[in-house]
Image (cartoon, rainbow, N blue to C red; front, side):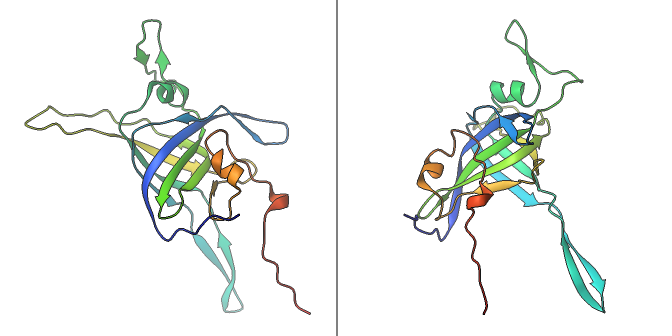
Length: 200
C-alpha cells in the first residue's frame, strides 16, 4: 500500500555514512555497514553540471544533459572519531590521540539522511561522496555560550555504474523504507516502474 504524499519538507535528521570499500567483478560497489553521524545541523547541496544546447537547422537540435553530481556543505555539531579515522584518514595512535598527516587520503562513502515531511520522512542516499577536511575554529566564551559547529564540504559524484542518488517517495516499498539505514539500497532497474503510452 502506497504511503500518503507529502506536501512540504522541513528539518534534517538521521545522517549516516557507509564507507565505500571496493568494487566487485561486476563493477558494483561494496560498502561497510552504515554508521550514524550525530548532530546534523544543516545540509545545502546543489546540482553540478549544466544543460548545453546543440544547434542545427537554425534551432536547438539536441540538448546535452551534463550530470556532474552535486556539491555543497554538511554542517554538524562535531566530527566524530569514527568519521575522522575511517573517512578523513586521521590516525588514532596508541595513546588515543588523533593524528593528521600530510600524506593521508580521504575515503569515499555513501551519505544517508532524511527530511521531515508533513506525512512521511523523505529518505535519501548519495552513493559516492568525498569530503574536504573541515576547518579548525572556535572562539573564547563571553557572557553567553555559543555552540561552534563544523562544516564538511561535500562532493557527490556517480558510481562506475552511473548511479548518483536515490530517495524515497510515496511509492517506496515498506520493507525498503523501514530498512533504509541498515545497508546501502541499490535499485533493481528490471523492476523499475514506468509509464508507457502506446498509440494505435
